[in-house]
Length: 288
Image (tube, rainbow, N blue to C red; front, top):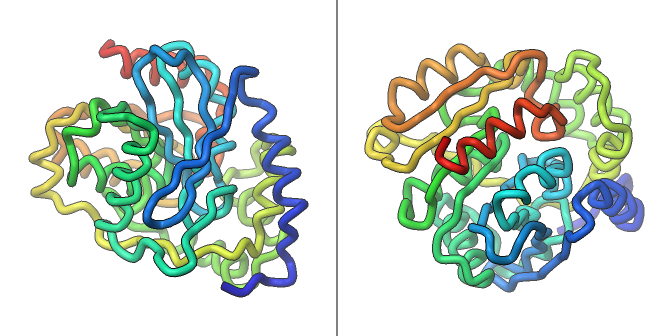
């Protein structure tokens, strides 16, 4: 997989570690072998606590981006946050096998959980990671106790045309300035963590595999899902229409709690350091 001239692996690693330094002091890292490559997992929280698997969004999100929520979640769970295989991060994809289907992504997650010694877990995810997590819950519901989804993409609604148009320059010719311009547009000029933003810029041109993005979860399958779901939608999201996401999800998910988070956009999650958000997540995980 050829690298582009803009990508600097050393600069990316430095930026990654700076964001990861915001995690709790007891954080540790583990590499888990799977059929699709070695998966880097960042871990924190009490060893005896129930497991929580956190999946980041796509693009340059990486597991490090959970820094604003990790400490609060680690008070009630043993947190396992992997870097998506084939995406920006410290996971190392296999040279001869890449996830090409939803079934492949589910197999990767099953192998990851097996490697961690986890039979079933609570699962939380953002954006593209939420699409993966929802598909996995539909395929292997016995492995998912509770599921929270932060502004999931392509689960209940498609992308807005304006979002795709603004993303196109960054996708066609990745460059730090294009990444910054896109994120500043989507977040409406909100104040962004400079080290988080530097990590997004450093990931421009990362030699990623083509992500699996199809199909959308089938409505009939969603109606049969008995896993409790918390859906938190970003009110200011420019990715999709928040009202469409909430109405469609409410119509098909039998055990769903839905809330719209005011004053936050799609790409500002999950870095939003809001006490209300942390309390919402921990209450849900505790069955409250």
